[in-house]
Image (tube, rainbow, N blue to C red; front, side):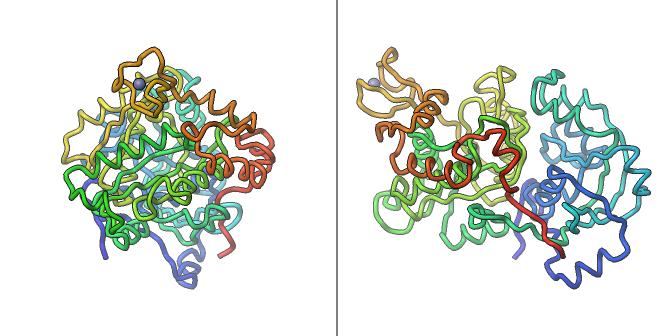
Length: 425
Ligand SMILES: [Zn+2]
């Protein structure tokens, strides 16, 4: 079945699954190694996470993305997806426009890259237009400045599918597989919760709020009974480049799943998957990019909280909301849900959203730092703040995958196995 992706265009799928055919197609092609970042993005392109783009972007698309937040054909697009390469590599590999090459990852064939264009692009323009700053303190800008001199633009065809390791294996679904799962579940309205966090009660309530809002005017009895739900929450964890102090990906995925396993969400309204993506911290522009990815996964709604994908003080708390609101409805095929901030009110004795009850001075915000220190101390907090089952899973993940810590350490960066590998074809 053909599915529709972002921009109302057919969902991109450029994968050769037949090994014999794949081997034949790459025979005689020059090999060009891709680093983890480029390999991750090639995989994302081929499976359609970034539909409708079919390859690494060409100059006209990057230009339109920077200046108009669109692809050259007018489809909304906010972050350039580019393949960088040095002049020396171009010379060494003997690459020219019009060539098809075989991208390899860790020595094994990954994808066919039909190079249509070799071009350069002003990095400061990308920084200013996409991130709103030229400061290299911004991690997205730093990443942009680290790009080599030239970009290669052209279509990608995956010839060798990634092998995703435990405990991630059951959580990695392609856009097509997401849609098949939703069909099985008979979900009509599905809201995305974007996360890089181990959930505390504040996150749990963000999801519950988003679920209720997305369910909207659907028949209420579907929510009240134990019958089959027609709306769902998809927790889509971002798995990619890590920084010291982040939660380890294993802890994120497993704790999010624990919320359903221990009954805080019904089995048939909640599901956890992951997407490979290196966060750019582009704030509002990244919120648009996340909407695009989730549209391609087949979601109907997307939750956006405070300072979505932001970093430092580069964007104001609700700048992403305002940018999303400025995009015409027909250009972004997913409905944003703007969620309030949740806190614990000791007076009400419950978790509530800020601005709802009148106990302004008593509200206890869920500060990331506070939650972190609770986890570091290994003392189980009250279940109103942090679910005990989630706490146990964090501790377990730290031992099993984090070399003793649920947070990324230098040790983890050096020793953790990559989430996916490419095996010999
Ligand atoms: Zn209160």
